[in-house]
Structures are given as C-alpha cells and as structure tokens.
Length: 75
Image (cartoon, rainbow, N blue to C red):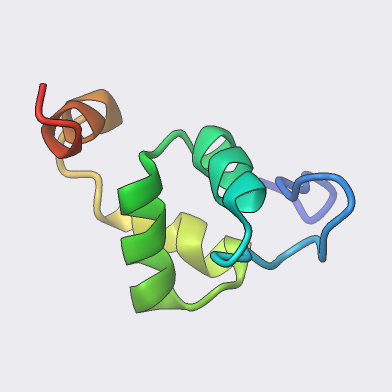
C-alpha cells in the first residue's frame, strides 16, 4: 500500500480509529475486513493509528480472515 492509498473513512483523521464511535468501528471493520471484536483487540494492542492496526492484523492472520471472523462470530 503506498502513501497515497488511504484507508481512512471520510471526515475523520486519516490515520486514526475512534473506538468511541460506533460508526467509526463499523466502517473501519469493513475497510480492514475484520470483525468489530478483532478491530478493538488490534487497537488495544497496536494503538489507534490505522496503519499500525493494519500491520498488526496482517501479522496475526495465520488462517484466512474469513475463518477468524467466523470463529469470533461463533460460526
């Protein structure tokens, strides 16, 4: 991902994830293709900078992400 490829939702600080906003959590979860629980865990570990969270999530994907989302959702 190049510096020009921003993943930030419109209208927010381009590199921050606000866990206090349900809309932000929902949007970031979709953009990063993770469950809301995975996003919250990643922010807890990596901080609220989107690039740090993305790198943490990429490093934690030993299985496919669909498998992890299903696991978190109890499916």
